[in-house]
Length: 124
Ligand SMILES: [Ca+2]
Image (cartoon, rainbow, N blue to C red; front, side, top):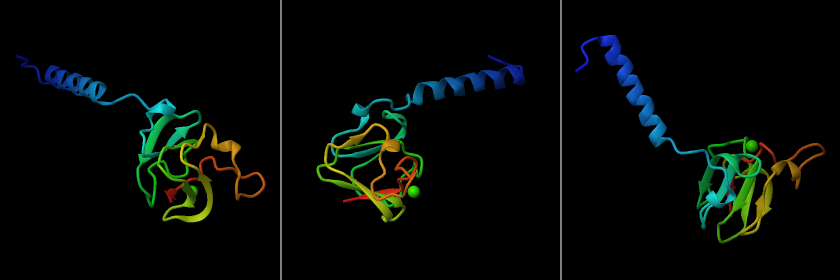
């Protein structure tokens, strides 16, 4: 039994950190992390870092204006919107379509603009 409150506090902190280490999964880092039926957005290029996935038509995505790669595994084409609530300019990917770097796409955009760090919602 630990009687020293400082030692007890440190021990509790170690236990808490251990819990975080056990429960926090690794950042998604592969295109195959996108399940069938979902459209997926990754924070970074080449399907790496934080993954947002949704099987429907979200009005907003958690990685708003920060997605750099995507994979459409929904059964239909998906329209990716520049703004939340399906507003603004769009880029569409057919079912099975993917982009390992949205910086290489500028569909419907102006000179020097790309789809990198731009997507805010998606729909059908
Ligand atoms: Ca946006």
